Length: 121
Image (cartoon, rainbow, N blue to C red; front, side, top):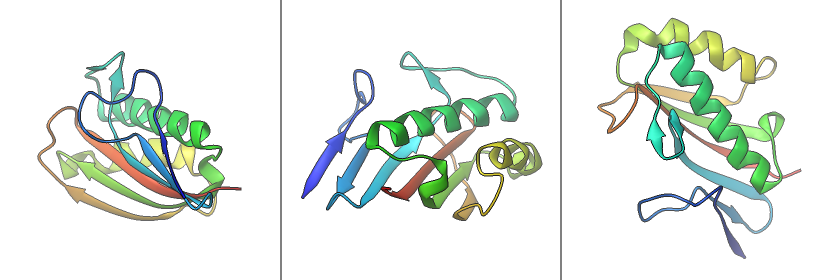
């Protein structure tokens, strides 16, 4: 079984916000610092917070939450932003954080993007 989950009007491009597989796992597409379909530029802390808020909204739509995230993929335009990114990331995953990879990337929009895999409770 495969269920597509989109939040709001859905993505403007050919992908889904999330796909729930077998009713057990949620695979979330990368989220960025978007509001109403537009990038909201700011400090790395502001962009990371908005990105994680967007990710949490998709997780909630899947019936999951941060305690059930098992892996995150994180992309930063500038690795000098790593400390500010981590400070906000810790707010969302304060204890027993998920496995994670963080790499530098040339992103289309914003300074940060995060995707994840979660187990459904």
